[in-house]
Image (cartoon, rainbow, N blue to C red):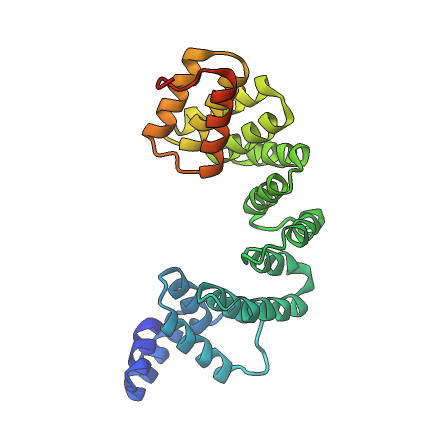
Length: 260
């Protein structure tokens, strides 16, 4: 009903919109939100940004003095989706001020922004995970933090964080992260074990095959190196840096590509 009302509003059908909103409120049971905030969250997932803007404007008009953290976070998400990163960060900060105990939400959204501030993101994710009350999306936060550690070449920290993620919800991504971390640390046996676990969960991931090829190259296993490399290409390995690293080591050791 709320979405129908927003649609009517976008067509300047004030009577139809008002009737739809009244019907929506009859069926809405949540006490911690509103028909407009709830619909805005759903519409964001559907990329219906114009309707999200209308929903949030109705929320502003209906309760200007009681705007909560959810309202500002939705505004932040909307601006981030539209590429308006400064505006998004500003709204995240307002959300954080309103509810300091849930500031993990602010950090999650602020540092999802592609601002290049990896060290700032790392510090805030670490602070988020240090709170006594766990964030509802702890697993995602760990994955993001682990990825930042990899980017900053803090491989021991990355390995530890990916392993925590594996304990919580093992996946190809978590085991691949462990494998990459171990490989960069020179722990080739552990790297291969982790990459094998990743491969069991998804045997079509090109990065997994690429790193398996690197491990085989480093451990002088010619046939396996060639096979892993062949599979990596077959399933679509596109990472230019990883491909370049594989080719460089292939030239160094003199095998790994059946074309040699």
